[in-house]
Figure 1 (cartoon, rainbow, N blue to C red):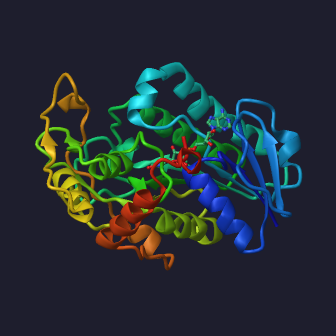
Figure 2: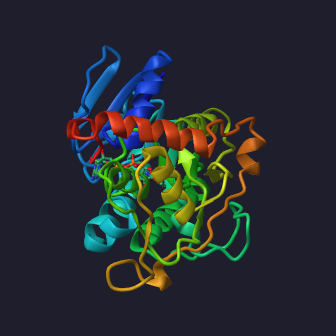
Figure 3: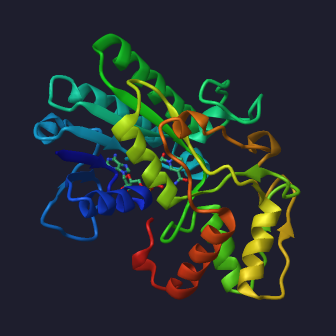
Amino acid sequence: MKILVTGGNGFIGHTLVKHLLDEGGQVKVIDIKPIKFTHKNLEFVKKSVLEDIRWDMRDCDMVYHLAAELGVVNSDKKPLNTLAVNIDGTVNIFRCALGTGVKKIVYTSSSEVYGEPREIPIKEDSQKSPVSIYGVSKLTAEMYAKGYVQEYGMDINPVRLFNVYGPGQGFEWVMPIFMQKALNGEQPLVFGDGSQVRCFTHIADVISGIETVRKKGAKGEAYNIANTDKITMKELAELIIKFSGKDIKPRIAGFGKETRQKEREIMKRVPSIEKLRALGWQPKVNIQEGIKTTYNWYKEHLGKESLFYE
Ligand SMILES: NC(=O)c1ccc[n+]([C@@H]2O[C@H](COP(=O)([O-])OP(=O)(O)OC[C@H]3O[C@@H](n4cnc5c(N)ncnc54)[C@H](O)[C@@H]3O)[C@@H](O)[C@H]2O)c1
């Protein structure tokens, strides 16, 4: 079986590709940036998901579609590119897969599609009201996925990932930012009053979650992939500082000029993962342990920027 991974050079894609190769799989990666290693069962195609990729799909049995413009801040800076890559690029994947041997597509969506939740825990069929361009782009692509399932009988599973973290994640994400600050003896900057609740999900649980969906996911169904351990942003900063042993405190910055506006902040994001649990999956990395090992990785590798995903 050959699996196509778009965005295979990224933080999650790279880890996924390594996992698939370790399992003995044949993998083809499409990315605009070259993948950093070689393997006898790995083929790399330097291409954008906005290009015609029907030929590249001809020998693939399934697709993991990860390529995207990422993050709330980045997508605010590059709105048109975000909409193009995340919507047109995703629809292009669906369109190109039609009439090929591709049997399943797993598309990485995001918890950002829910916006500020009306109910806790957030279930897959809870209301979607994204407050960011990134969230809107991810939700729009999900709606196209639904259309392709209904119209053409394709098997597409959107998976909604919740605050992924782990070794190598780039410095535009909160966990590595806090870790870098703590390692340098500087105060991590916490938006608002720090009471925002998140469920951070370790990369290892993300990989086992999306693999469960690939193998057992029901046709066309969306799944939350998350840990359910809750932590506030202030607690996260304090925990990282504790691991650093530095005599510093988080800087509680409020909302406003130097930080995100309150209207754009999600105050509580706690998922239900019962739907994926019913397929036999379970997150295994508890938040304390996951943060500790990730912190130790950054401590060892800070300064070796080539090891980080951009
Ligand atoms: N990291 C998270 O916390 C998180 C949370 C929710 C959802 N997701 C989703 O998971 C997926 C992977 O995220 P990640 O953290 O690995 O991101 P990443 O930025 O590390 O990787 C994205 C990859 O996509 C590639 N790419 C960008 N534009 C492309 C294009 N036009 N054509 C081909 N390749 C292109 C980039 O070069 C990069 O290698 C994304 O779809 C993202 O929306 C991530």
